[in-house]
Amino acid sequence: MRIKILENGHRPIQKIILGLIRATSADKQVPGPIAVMSYHRDLFGKYIAGCYQEAMRNATEWTEGECELFAAFVSQLNQCKY
Image (cartoon, rainbow, N blue to C red; front, side, top):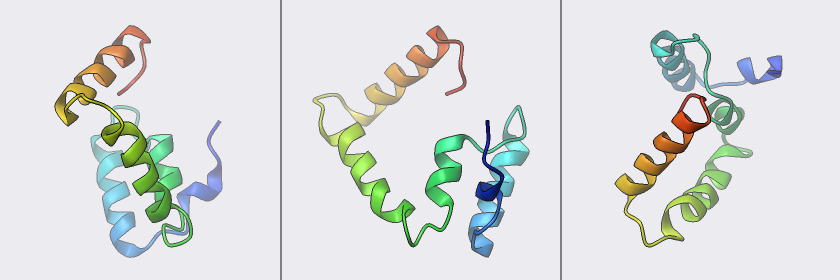
């Protein structure tokens, strides 16, 4: 289920970036986490992005590349898009 409100409330540059994501995506949709973090970015996205970065990247001994590889592998096993 996708919330329709996430399709609005973006600044012009964000609209361009999201449009590019849609154009290059196989299902022509912006992935949910990106849509949520870009919705009214001033209120939510830019603050939570730092927390996500810290939790996902800096709390491990793995390099950024290794984390990306593991995520892609797990997504493939789960038969979902990475």
